[in-house]
Image 1 (cartoon, rainbow, N blue to C red):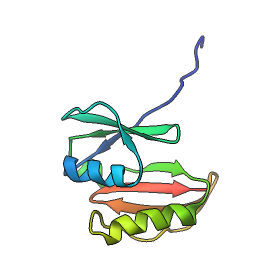
Image 2: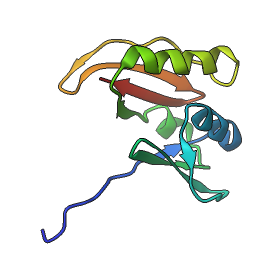
Image 3: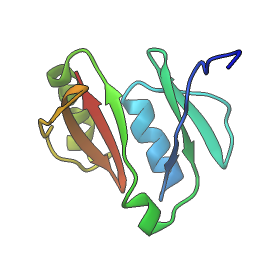
Image 4: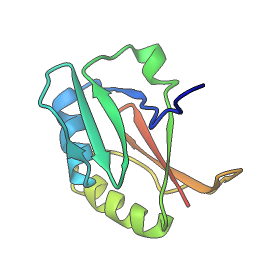
Length: 116
């Protein structure tokens, strides 16, 4: 092809759009345009589209992977947000995928996966 993609963005479902926005902003993601249906969130050159849309069967099967340089530091940041009551989650689960060590924390029905 003549032009390679610059990025591929996933649409992340949100059962409670406002709560989800606060969760990702607390994790340090910067919000793009203030739209009531879809909002871009980015941090460190990566991003995703949070959508004000929820279908339980689809949301329960949704995952995305995010790679970070230091999983332990990332989890410390996420855990502080979870302990504040802004989200619910569990500690990283280490997995040997081709991409390295991975863990996950859950915000509502959204799963945020991080890896090194």
